[in-house]
Amino acid sequence: DGGITQSPKYLFRKEGQNVTLSCEQNLNHDAMYWYRQDPGQGLRLIYYSQIVNDFQKGDIAEGYSVSREKKESFPLTVTSAQKNPTAFYLCASSPMMTGRYNQPQHFGDGTRLSIL
Amino acid sequence: QKEVEQNSGPLSVPEGAIASLNCTYSDRGSQSFFWYRQYSGKSPELIMFIYSNGDKEDGRFTAQLNKASQYVSLLIRDSQPSDSATYLCAVNGRDSWGKLQFGAGTQVVVTP
Image 1 (cartoon, helix red, strand yellow):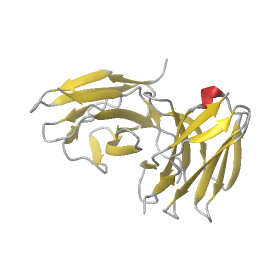
Image 2 (cartoon, rainbow over the protein chains, first blue to last red):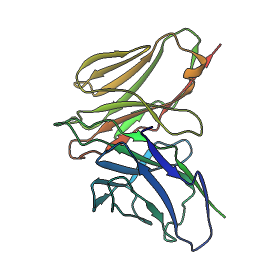
Image 3 (cartoon, helix red, strand yellow):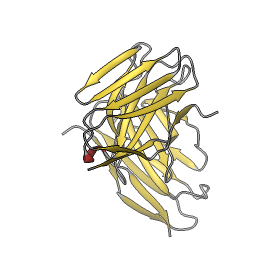
């Protein structure tokens, strides 16, 4: 079954702690994305990656870091510098653009992060 | 001005009626438009995408795009209680390879 797997489903962070959210896809998609969703709000882009070993900051990258060592994997680290990390984190992936058109992004089930 | 704007709702629709959702966007160069459905506590799932002006139908869903007026809409025909969800509009920007801007979503409530 092709899809995007995020783990864990729920995560609790202590003060001063870094935590890492996992995202794995077996759709053979080139691009991967991390979004944050706060209650009643839309999705805000944290980081995105178009190819292995390359990634770009999104709109709210401060306090977060990523890596893209494998095509299938795009883990997100929420560092202690992110002072308000409580949110729903969503990982997505998509094929490369076709000409001037974006391909649809598909989402994992998400990780809920809370502060202890 | 937000890049992608949607009426937050809730939009209350009787079962069997047509739900009409609107989305306006600010970047005149946008080329790709997506509608996602998000149930409470779940992740978004793709419903439809549209690239060209006009209508695109898929089952009970129709997306309508008007680039001159910079809006995209979603019609849900024969609305069912299972259609009760938040619907997110997403649009790419001209200089935003692969990136999408999401609206805050419209909550739809289908009443039996």
